[in-house]
Length: 168
Image (cartoon, rainbow, N blue to C red; front, top):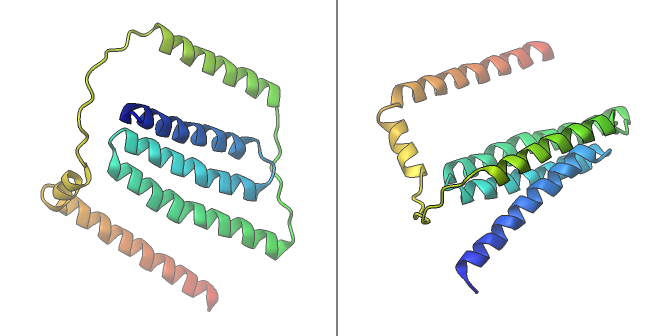
């Protein structure tokens, strides 16, 4: 199988997965289904970052959004439903105006894509970006990096102190 064809198939898989799961996030009435569809949306975006040659952003997408925010969201929804015996449902308001606006934006984007004269170049090999970002953090930007880490440590200690005061 041609490597170009395989690359296109994988790209369209990630693009389709991202768009379809984002549609489930928007149109589903069950919050748990929305959260799990958001998982696939985040993974799809990470895959698209890999295709753009942004390996650091792909890794950060998986670690921060999938590993942190999405897990927190799922636990929050599950614990809230158990505590208060709520059956949370998302309501869809004003479907037709939103559909008309979305269709207008989509048609505008399609028109722009068709009418633009795109410049084609040969495919360049993608270099990893994480080594350069790490070198910049440890050489030129070491002071701001350390200051940011100190601020995050202070925020963590402050949050722990606030929780401790409330429990006493």
